[in-house]
Image (cartoon, rainbow, N blue to C red; front, side, top):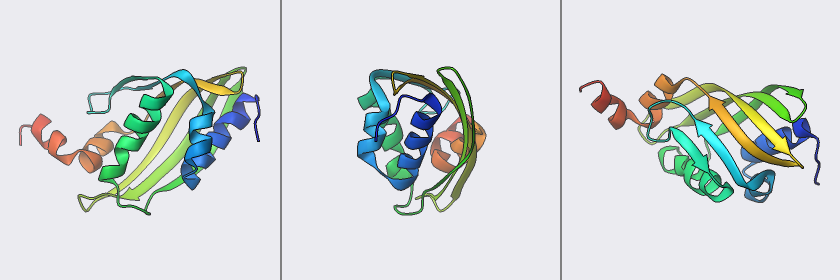
Length: 142
């Protein structure tokens, strides 16, 4: 199913991430999309292009998460024109023995039924401590 309604596009994308549907995830993005993950983490930067977003940024989280433990829940969306704000929770066990449990917010811009940009906000301290514990220790002088 394909839709151009921005809210429906974002909901479809988040549900595809929840369900692990890589075809829908890939179909959700424009080829030249960007994803900005602010902060000073190893993943903090502007990711350019659908392949980099999906394969390197989103796919890059796989090695630090225990397979089969990821849970995504869409909490709410607010839409105005081409912009959609989505709030979700992400939970998973990590290979470091911890639990990743974060509440996230993304500002999506959708054009012609494709996500063209995302700016994501999350508790980056929690991300550092649970997903990048060696990097967090190095930054704290440990």
